[in-house]
Length: 419
Image (cartoon, rainbow, N blue to C red; front, side, top):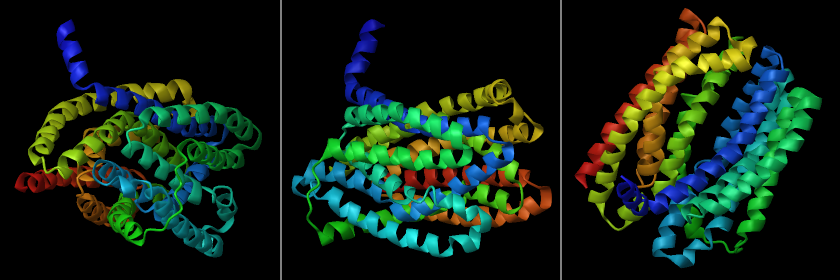
C-alpha cells in the first residue's frame, strides 16, 4: 500500500502540489469574503442583510461587463504562449489591462449616470462598491496570469497574507459601521490584493500589441457572454426576489449559495490546476489524452458529488441552527431541500468548465447554453414567482441548471470524440 501511494504521488506530484497551493490561495481570498458575509448575517437584521446581498448582486453583474472573460482568456493564452511563444507572454498583462480599464470606465460612467433611476434610495450604497468595478477584474487578471504560469505557490502566499491583514480592518469596519462598513471592506480588500499582486509580479511591459488585444478580446467575448448567461440563471434570482419584495428570502438564498461555494471550491480549484496541462495536450494535438482525462474525471467526480449532496442536506441545516439560529426558519429549510438536488450537476459543471471546455477553446458551448438558459431562467422566474411565490425561483434554478449542465457534457463529449 505504501509503495502504491508513493507511486501515485510521484506520478501526480505536480498536480497535487499545485492543487494544494491553489486551494490555500482561493480559501485565503474567499475566506475574507465569507468572513464579511457571516459578520453581516450576525450583525445585520435579516432585512438589511437582504439589502446587502441585493447590492452585491448588482455590482457583480456590472463586474461581468468590466471583466467580460478577460481573466479567463488571459489564463488560456498565458499557458499557450508559455509553451509556444515566449515573446508574446510578457505583453499579455499590459494589453489585457487596457481592455479592462476601458470597459471599467464605460460601466462606471453608465452606473453613475443611471444608477439613481433604477435603484432609487438604494443607489447610495452602490457608491461604496464602485471601486470594485476596476479592482475585482484586475485581481482576476493577475490570478489568471499566475495560474497560466503555474505560479500557484506565490499566489497562495500573497492571498493568505492579504487575507490575514484584511481581517483586522474588515472586523473594525463591519462592527462599527454595519452595512456600509461591509461594503467598504469589499472594495478595500480588493485594493490591497491588487497592490500586492502588482508589486510581486512586476513584469509590466508597456507596449501595445493590437493583434494581441484583438486575440484576447475576441476569445473573452465568448467567455463574457457565457458569464452574463451564468448570472442570468444564478445571481439574477436575487434581483428577481428583491423586485418582488422577498428581501429576507434573499438572505436565505445567499446562505445556501455560500454553502454551495464552499463545496464547489475544491472542484473548481482542481479544474484550474489541471487546465494548463489539458491546454498543452490540446495544443500539441494529443486529443486522445484529453478524452482519456475527461472520462477518468467523470467516473471519479460524479459519485463523490452525489455523496456530498446527501451530506449537505442533512448537515447544513444543523450548521444554520447552531450558528445562525435566526435564519433557521421554514423558508430556509425549503431552500436547502430544493437546491440540494442541484449539487451533483453543479459540481461536475464547475469542474468540467474550468478544466476542459474553456481550456480547450470550446468556451462557445458555455456561452450559448448559459445565455439561452439564463434568458429562459429569467422568464420562468417571473412566471413561477407569481404562481407559487419565492419557491418558484428555487425550482426553476434546479431545473435550468441541471438540464444545461447535462447538455453541455454530452455535447462536449461529442465534439471531442469527433477530433
